[in-house]
Image 1: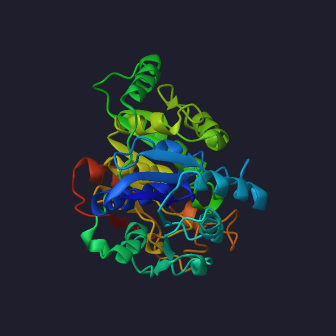
Image 2: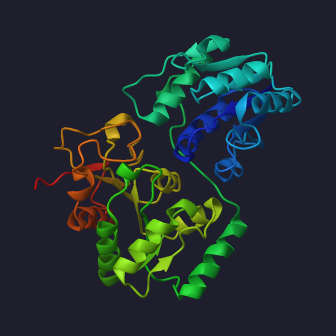
Image 3: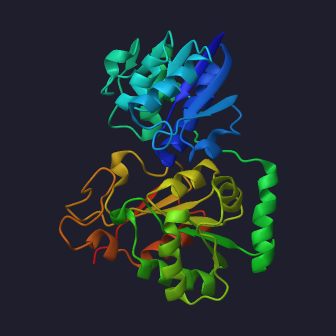
Length: 355
């Protein structure tokens, strides 16, 4: 029986999209244990996953940063006596870390800069969604992506629901109230729809649809505050910076629809099987990171020749126009909400209204 380590220290969305691999590995291999190595921020995403026995944290931007921090992390891994390591994360640091930990059988991707540090490598199919690209690693174990569990899934501790209920009680949100969760943040500026757009959206949702909850991490607090000030909606519940990841998962379980940029909340909603309106500005679903669900509507301006300008978006518009953000209207987004509420979208729908 294998003592398996799965190393995924990428962004939060990357960790969510790795969860089908966790389920497939658990189902397909003869495992004594399955441990996930991830970042401190992503730990809540996998700690309650049914396929996962243990979670280890690699604080690669904190105590474990730099070469000596990586050596320290490698020693901790060595003490766990793993027999097999699988690395869906393509980074050179991950490959070197696993080699320094002297794990006897290491599996990674041929596209990794550290491919030569693995015992076996798999080819990632670039024309697939990221969920399926990650699952390409199962070819090492005799499975194609089509034979794998391809459903992203995240779980939270049931006690977390009390946090959501406390927030809702304070805001006087009743159990029968339709709730719409709006997530306006992103690490990259050009992946964010405009604050004016979100403010108008919040007003429309609060007036015609139900209660609106504004969500985001600590870094999204200034954006959320600006939207709250512009929207002037007394019933708005602004939880930006107040709800941790587990509480956010429990919160979106109450949502009729989640409206999000191309960012982690979009993937989290999909992993909880909640309908999503996904707003794509500088990036495009063709990069492989669109909502992996038939309960999703994609809002974008496909006619813009400059999209995608970068793989992850960027800090500013290369052309200085910000058209990919500015041309998306509240009508576009509400059309997506309406489509989901009517259950009229059998697959992700591309909304692209010419101006």
